[in-house]
Image (tube, rainbow, N blue to C red):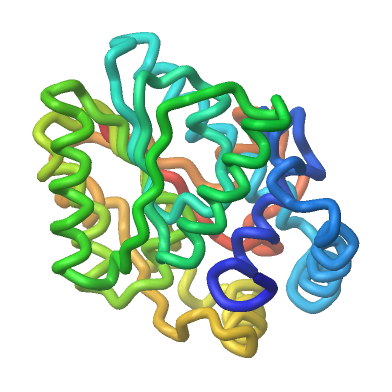
Amino acid sequence: MHGGVALTAYLVNESRARRPGLAADPLAAAWIPDGDRDGVRQLWQGYADAVYPHDDLVVALRGRLIADELARALAADPATVLVVCGAGFSSYPWLLDFPAALEVDLPEMAEAKRRRAAELTAAGTLPRRDVRHLGADLGSAADRERVTQAVRELAAGRPVAYVAEGLVFYLPPEDARAVVTLGAGFGGTALTAVSYWPAAASGSRVLAVQREWFRSRSVPPEASYLTHAELAELLGGPLLDLGPEDLQRRYLGKVEVPESELIPEYVAVAG
């Protein structure tokens, strides 16, 4: 599990686990099996030394905003169903009591998540939730259609909160835009939250080093960038759109690390 997409999943959880209060995710560390914990910490430190040492800040802030927006959607309508694409080892369906959730990731990753969730539920670490796991390649139009049909069946007319986190920038541009707008086919999307790299940050020094590090570890070489205007057009309305400095001001009350020293990952929320 230490290569390809699973590599990024482990790094994300280790980053969230290093700032559980900021991320508001007390379950982050639990997803990493005890036998892998030392290896994942070494992997994270190698990433920190080679790329940048602030992934815990960026990932914790990203997850915090998404969790807060999901909580808002659920409070507005407790019947809301959760859909997370690029789910990795995220904790949203267990942190928030959605009546049902669908997590989508590449087949190997989805199966690993299903197994680990079953282990943690049996151990009493996770509360029992109605969470489905669907293996799909979101770079495939046919698989995106399968996801849409699965969501429509699960939601059965209920509103949907849709999250595409840590995903669209690894897809070719046409597929990235299709994933952003996937929720339009769900039959009633109350919220869409998408993390992305802005086009203006495509020359980021930190991002260039990160791309090279990931390419050497079987993460797809494609990269897509979006703009606020493109996202507003794709999602059909005004957006809450926050970057790393905005999120630091919101949750820390100040900018501790300037965006020039961070992966420039933004989170856009519609609905």
